[in-house]
Length: 79
Image 1 (cartoon, rainbow, N blue to C red):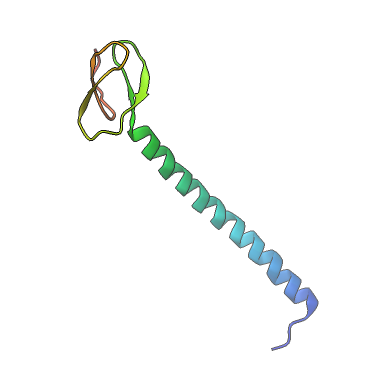
Image 2 (image 1 turned 180 degrees about the horizontal axis):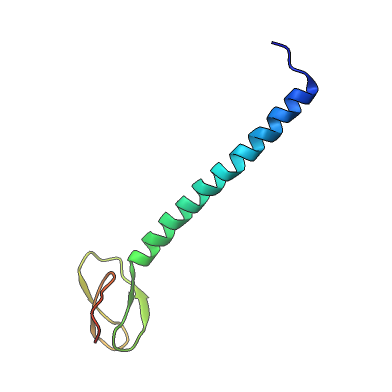
């Protein structure tokens, strides 16, 4: 199989145009996963709105500032 210089350059350019979107999708997916894991440990106090991280596996935690009991995760409860 013979490959001219023009064909070789064409294949290189096409490969770059194909690989850039693939790398972009992979990078964004990995970044979103890291962001989701970081937000899973974040708790915002319902009383004083203090944001803190808690890595324990319990469902409710006490706020270090005001001592109010808060649920971990995305709670839809108000008040």
